[in-house]
Image (tube, rainbow, N blue to C red; front, side):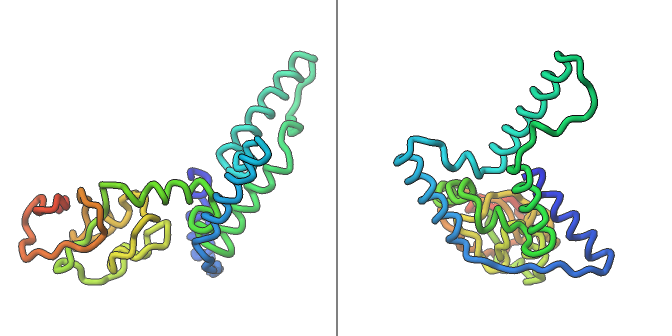
Length: 206
């Protein structure tokens, strides 16, 4: 997540340099297919298949091998920068980052990551959700622009993909978005705009 946050910064840099990056969209079902196939292969082969393609696991292994490789060289009396602990899996991480910068914003998290697919399934039963107060919303679209998952909070299109990051809430100048204790994404309609907390638990600004 930290690494792929930087891809957004690089996309903004490209726009500053008047280079327009693409933003292709793919099917969100890809990550669920990969999750299912990975779990099936794990059971059949008794191997942690998903761990071989999951970026946090890849980075952990690469960092471990790199550091221990350096210590081994020091024990042998050798010095200098050494990249022998890194493998071609590092190129996968770099490839994902470059793809997100130039072709599709947050491609891995939105469409491909099997871990994200698992978290999304768990998100279906979450009790804390972002809710919209319909009569406060001016449909400005600011929340849509900042959403890293490509969701549309101003139309209550969040569902299982929303991870409650809060970027849409902080970007809403109309105070139309807030957190609620609820099992559904339907908007809250209220004629009162000064309450700190509405009767469904949506936290609002005064």
